[in-house]
Image 1: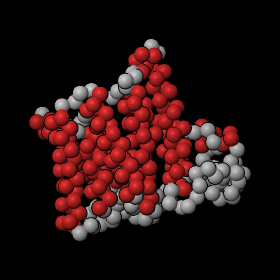
Image 2: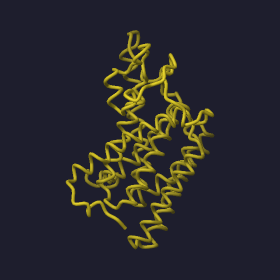
Image 3: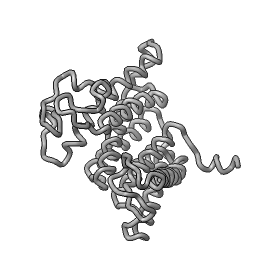
Length: 278
Protein backbone atom coordinates (compact mmCIF):
# COMPACT_ATOMS: atom_id res chain seq x y z
CA UNK A 1 0.00 0.00 0.00
CA UNK A 2 1.43 3.37 -1.06
CA UNK A 3 0.02 6.64 0.22
CA UNK A 4 0.56 10.08 -1.30
CA UNK A 5 1.20 11.34 2.23
CA UNK A 6 4.69 9.83 1.99
CA UNK A 7 5.61 12.32 -0.74
CA UNK A 8 5.79 15.20 1.77
CA UNK A 9 4.49 17.77 -0.70
CA UNK A 10 1.87 20.49 -0.08
CA UNK A 11 -1.73 19.29 -0.35
CA UNK A 12 -2.60 22.04 -2.84
CA UNK A 13 0.08 20.70 -5.18
CA UNK A 14 -1.45 17.23 -5.10
CA UNK A 15 -4.89 18.66 -5.86
CA UNK A 16 -3.46 20.70 -8.73
CA UNK A 17 -1.74 17.65 -10.22
CA UNK A 18 -4.92 15.59 -9.84
CA UNK A 19 -6.95 18.31 -11.56
CA UNK A 20 -4.42 18.63 -14.39
CA UNK A 21 -4.35 14.89 -14.95
CA UNK A 22 -8.15 14.84 -14.84
CA UNK A 23 -8.59 17.42 -17.60
CA UNK A 24 -6.15 15.46 -19.78
CA UNK A 25 -8.19 12.29 -19.21
CA UNK A 26 -11.33 14.33 -19.87
CA UNK A 27 -9.92 15.34 -23.25
CA UNK A 28 -9.44 11.66 -24.09
CA UNK A 29 -12.96 10.86 -22.85
CA UNK A 30 -14.36 13.41 -25.29
CA UNK A 31 -12.73 11.53 -28.15
CA UNK A 32 -13.92 8.20 -26.77
CA UNK A 33 -17.52 9.44 -26.36
CA UNK A 34 -17.61 10.82 -29.90
CA UNK A 35 -16.17 7.67 -31.49
CA UNK A 36 -17.82 5.07 -29.24
CA UNK A 37 -19.88 2.58 -31.29
CA UNK A 38 -19.05 4.41 -34.53
CA UNK A 39 -16.35 2.05 -35.76
CA UNK A 40 -13.81 4.87 -35.74
CA UNK A 41 -10.39 4.21 -34.26
CA UNK A 42 -9.28 6.12 -31.17
CA UNK A 43 -5.90 6.62 -32.82
CA UNK A 44 -7.28 8.77 -35.62
CA UNK A 45 -6.22 12.43 -35.79
CA UNK A 46 -8.64 14.96 -34.27
CA UNK A 47 -10.28 17.33 -36.74
CA UNK A 48 -12.99 19.94 -37.04
CA UNK A 49 -16.36 18.24 -37.49
CA UNK A 50 -17.48 20.93 -39.95
CA UNK A 51 -14.54 21.56 -42.29
CA UNK A 52 -12.45 18.45 -41.45
CA UNK A 53 -9.40 20.65 -40.75
CA UNK A 54 -6.82 18.53 -38.83
CA UNK A 55 -6.26 20.12 -35.43
CA UNK A 56 -2.72 21.20 -34.61
CA UNK A 57 -1.01 20.39 -31.32
CA UNK A 58 -1.70 23.89 -30.01
CA UNK A 59 -5.42 23.36 -30.61
CA UNK A 60 -5.53 20.35 -28.33
CA UNK A 61 -4.69 21.81 -24.91
CA UNK A 62 -7.51 20.78 -22.56
CA UNK A 63 -9.68 23.73 -21.43
CA UNK A 64 -7.22 26.37 -22.65
CA UNK A 65 -7.60 25.78 -26.39
CA UNK A 66 -11.39 25.98 -26.18
CA UNK A 67 -11.22 29.26 -24.25
CA UNK A 68 -8.53 30.73 -26.51
CA UNK A 69 -10.50 29.86 -29.66
CA UNK A 70 -13.71 31.07 -28.00
CA UNK A 71 -15.42 27.80 -28.85
CA UNK A 72 -14.94 28.09 -32.61
CA UNK A 73 -12.84 26.40 -35.28
CA UNK A 74 -9.68 28.32 -36.12
CA UNK A 75 -10.25 27.85 -39.88
CA UNK A 76 -14.00 27.86 -40.64
CA UNK A 77 -15.19 29.62 -37.50
CA UNK A 78 -17.87 27.00 -36.90
CA UNK A 79 -19.10 26.63 -33.33
CA UNK A 80 -17.50 23.83 -31.28
CA UNK A 81 -19.83 22.16 -28.82
CA UNK A 82 -19.20 23.25 -25.24
CA UNK A 83 -19.44 19.59 -24.22
CA UNK A 84 -15.68 19.28 -24.77
CA UNK A 85 -14.96 22.01 -22.26
CA UNK A 86 -17.42 20.81 -19.61
CA UNK A 87 -16.34 17.17 -19.79
CA UNK A 88 -12.70 18.18 -19.31
CA UNK A 89 -13.55 20.52 -16.43
CA UNK A 90 -15.84 18.02 -14.70
CA UNK A 91 -13.30 15.21 -14.96
CA UNK A 92 -10.56 17.44 -13.55
CA UNK A 93 -12.71 18.52 -10.60
CA UNK A 94 -13.82 14.95 -9.85
CA UNK A 95 -10.24 13.69 -9.93
CA UNK A 96 -9.20 16.44 -7.51
CA UNK A 97 -12.16 15.75 -5.20
CA UNK A 98 -11.06 12.11 -4.94
CA UNK A 99 -8.19 13.26 -2.74
CA UNK A 100 -10.74 14.30 -0.12
CA UNK A 101 -11.67 10.63 0.25
CA UNK A 102 -8.28 8.89 0.31
CA UNK A 103 -4.54 9.30 -0.25
CA UNK A 104 -3.96 5.61 -1.00
CA UNK A 105 -2.56 5.47 -4.52
CA UNK A 106 -4.29 2.28 -5.71
CA UNK A 107 -7.63 3.38 -4.28
CA UNK A 108 -7.24 6.72 -6.07
CA UNK A 109 -6.50 4.91 -9.33
CA UNK A 110 -9.61 2.76 -9.00
CA UNK A 111 -11.71 5.81 -8.13
CA UNK A 112 -10.35 7.72 -11.13
CA UNK A 113 -11.13 4.85 -13.48
CA UNK A 114 -14.63 4.58 -12.01
CA UNK A 115 -15.22 8.32 -12.38
CA UNK A 116 -14.00 8.28 -15.98
CA UNK A 117 -16.54 5.55 -16.81
CA UNK A 118 -19.28 7.53 -15.06
CA UNK A 119 -18.50 10.60 -17.15
CA UNK A 120 -18.80 8.56 -20.35
CA UNK A 121 -22.07 6.97 -19.19
CA UNK A 122 -23.54 10.34 -18.23
CA UNK A 123 -22.74 12.07 -21.51
CA UNK A 124 -23.64 9.09 -23.67
CA UNK A 125 -27.02 8.64 -22.01
CA UNK A 126 -27.70 12.38 -22.24
CA UNK A 127 -27.23 12.35 -26.00
CA UNK A 128 -28.46 8.87 -26.92
CA UNK A 129 -30.94 7.90 -24.16
CA UNK A 130 -29.20 4.58 -23.63
CA UNK A 131 -26.61 3.14 -21.25
CA UNK A 132 -24.38 0.60 -23.03
CA UNK A 133 -24.20 -2.68 -21.10
CA UNK A 134 -20.44 -2.82 -21.73
CA UNK A 135 -19.93 0.41 -19.76
CA UNK A 136 -22.14 -0.75 -16.90
CA UNK A 137 -20.22 -4.03 -16.75
CA UNK A 138 -16.85 -2.25 -16.68
CA UNK A 139 -18.14 0.10 -13.96
CA UNK A 140 -19.42 -2.83 -11.89
CA UNK A 141 -16.06 -4.61 -12.15
CA UNK A 142 -14.22 -1.45 -11.08
CA UNK A 143 -16.50 -0.96 -8.05
CA UNK A 144 -16.15 -4.63 -7.08
CA UNK A 145 -12.35 -4.34 -7.28
CA UNK A 146 -12.53 -1.23 -5.10
CA UNK A 147 -14.68 -3.06 -2.54
CA UNK A 148 -12.42 -6.13 -2.58
CA UNK A 149 -9.30 -3.98 -2.15
CA UNK A 150 -10.92 -2.16 0.76
CA UNK A 151 -11.84 -5.51 2.34
CA UNK A 152 -8.44 -7.20 2.03
CA UNK A 153 -6.13 -4.22 2.63
CA UNK A 154 -8.05 -2.25 5.22
CA UNK A 155 -9.53 -5.33 6.90
CA UNK A 156 -13.15 -4.27 6.45
CA UNK A 157 -15.61 -6.44 8.35
CA UNK A 158 -17.06 -9.12 6.04
CA UNK A 159 -20.56 -8.37 7.29
CA UNK A 160 -20.16 -4.76 6.12
CA UNK A 161 -19.31 -5.87 2.59
CA UNK A 162 -22.26 -8.28 2.51
CA UNK A 163 -24.59 -5.55 3.80
CA UNK A 164 -23.33 -3.17 1.11
CA UNK A 165 -24.07 -5.72 -1.61
CA UNK A 166 -27.56 -6.42 -0.28
CA UNK A 167 -28.30 -2.70 0.03
CA UNK A 168 -27.10 -2.10 -3.53
CA UNK A 169 -29.33 -4.91 -4.74
CA UNK A 170 -32.19 -3.33 -2.80
CA UNK A 171 -31.64 0.04 -4.46
CA UNK A 172 -31.47 -1.56 -7.87
CA UNK A 173 -34.52 -3.63 -7.01
CA UNK A 174 -36.50 -0.48 -6.26
CA UNK A 175 -35.72 0.90 -9.72
CA UNK A 176 -36.62 -2.51 -11.15
CA UNK A 177 -40.00 -2.25 -9.43
CA UNK A 178 -40.57 1.17 -11.03
CA UNK A 179 -39.49 -0.20 -14.42
CA UNK A 180 -41.93 -3.11 -14.19
CA UNK A 181 -44.74 -0.93 -12.80
CA UNK A 182 -44.41 1.63 -15.61
CA UNK A 183 -43.61 -0.97 -18.29
CA UNK A 184 -40.38 0.89 -19.01
CA UNK A 185 -41.99 4.33 -19.41
CA UNK A 186 -40.57 5.98 -16.28
CA UNK A 187 -36.99 4.82 -16.70
CA UNK A 188 -34.96 2.39 -18.76
CA UNK A 189 -33.68 -1.02 -17.75
CA UNK A 190 -30.16 0.34 -18.14
CA UNK A 191 -30.88 2.62 -15.17
CA UNK A 192 -31.85 -0.45 -13.13
CA UNK A 193 -28.51 -2.10 -13.89
CA UNK A 194 -26.55 1.11 -13.30
CA UNK A 195 -28.07 1.56 -9.84
CA UNK A 196 -26.31 -1.54 -8.49
CA UNK A 197 -22.66 -0.41 -8.82
CA UNK A 198 -23.60 3.13 -7.77
CA UNK A 199 -25.38 1.80 -4.69
CA UNK A 200 -22.39 -0.40 -3.90
CA UNK A 201 -19.91 2.46 -4.03
CA UNK A 202 -21.91 4.73 -1.69
CA UNK A 203 -22.41 1.96 0.85
CA UNK A 204 -25.38 0.54 2.72
CA UNK A 205 -25.85 3.55 5.01
CA UNK A 206 -26.30 5.94 2.09
CA UNK A 207 -28.12 3.85 -0.54
CA UNK A 208 -31.49 5.26 0.54
CA UNK A 209 -30.12 8.81 0.25
CA UNK A 210 -28.71 7.99 -3.18
CA UNK A 211 -32.10 6.77 -4.43
CA UNK A 212 -34.09 9.69 -2.99
CA UNK A 213 -31.60 12.34 -4.09
CA UNK A 214 -31.62 11.04 -7.67
CA UNK A 215 -35.34 11.88 -7.89
CA UNK A 216 -34.85 15.25 -6.20
CA UNK A 217 -32.11 16.21 -8.65
CA UNK A 218 -34.12 14.92 -11.60
CA UNK A 219 -37.19 16.91 -10.53
CA UNK A 220 -35.18 20.08 -9.86
CA UNK A 221 -33.39 19.97 -13.22
CA UNK A 222 -36.51 19.11 -15.21
CA UNK A 223 -38.63 21.82 -13.57
CA UNK A 224 -35.86 24.36 -14.06
CA UNK A 225 -35.67 23.59 -17.79
CA UNK A 226 -39.45 23.66 -18.15
CA UNK A 227 -39.63 27.00 -16.33
CA UNK A 228 -36.80 28.40 -18.43
CA UNK A 229 -38.54 27.42 -21.66
CA UNK A 230 -41.90 28.85 -20.55
CA UNK A 231 -40.34 32.19 -19.61
CA UNK A 232 -38.52 32.42 -22.93
CA UNK A 233 -41.27 31.09 -25.18
CA UNK A 234 -41.41 33.14 -28.37
CA UNK A 235 -37.99 34.67 -27.77
CA UNK A 236 -34.73 33.92 -29.57
CA UNK A 237 -32.59 31.95 -27.16
CA UNK A 238 -30.36 28.95 -26.87
CA UNK A 239 -32.39 25.85 -26.02
CA UNK A 240 -31.05 23.66 -23.23
CA UNK A 241 -32.42 20.58 -24.93
CA UNK A 242 -33.08 19.75 -28.56
CA UNK A 243 -36.88 19.67 -28.10
CA UNK A 244 -39.27 21.46 -25.77
CA UNK A 245 -39.56 19.65 -22.45
CA UNK A 246 -42.95 18.93 -20.86
CA UNK A 247 -44.09 16.94 -17.83
CA UNK A 248 -44.66 13.94 -20.14
CA UNK A 249 -41.27 14.14 -21.88
CA UNK A 250 -38.81 11.28 -21.60
CA UNK A 251 -35.51 12.37 -20.07
CA UNK A 252 -32.27 10.42 -19.59
CA UNK A 253 -32.14 9.31 -15.95
CA UNK A 254 -28.50 8.17 -15.77
CA UNK A 255 -27.16 11.74 -15.29
CA UNK A 256 -29.39 12.09 -12.22
CA UNK A 257 -28.29 8.72 -10.83
CA UNK A 258 -24.63 9.58 -11.34
CA UNK A 259 -25.00 13.09 -9.91
CA UNK A 260 -26.82 11.73 -6.85
CA UNK A 261 -24.19 9.05 -6.19
CA UNK A 262 -21.36 11.58 -6.49
CA UNK A 263 -23.02 14.06 -4.13
CA UNK A 264 -23.59 11.31 -1.58
CA UNK A 265 -20.09 9.89 -2.06
CA UNK A 266 -18.23 13.18 -1.60
CA UNK A 267 -20.49 14.88 0.97
CA UNK A 268 -21.96 11.86 2.84
CA UNK A 269 -25.36 13.53 2.51
CA UNK A 270 -27.90 11.55 4.52
CA UNK A 271 -31.60 12.11 3.83
CA UNK A 272 -32.63 10.41 7.09
CA UNK A 273 -30.50 12.78 9.17
CA UNK A 274 -31.99 15.71 7.25
CA UNK A 275 -35.54 14.68 8.16
CA UNK A 276 -34.63 13.84 11.76
CA UNK A 277 -33.31 17.37 12.28
CA UNK A 278 -36.53 19.00 11.09
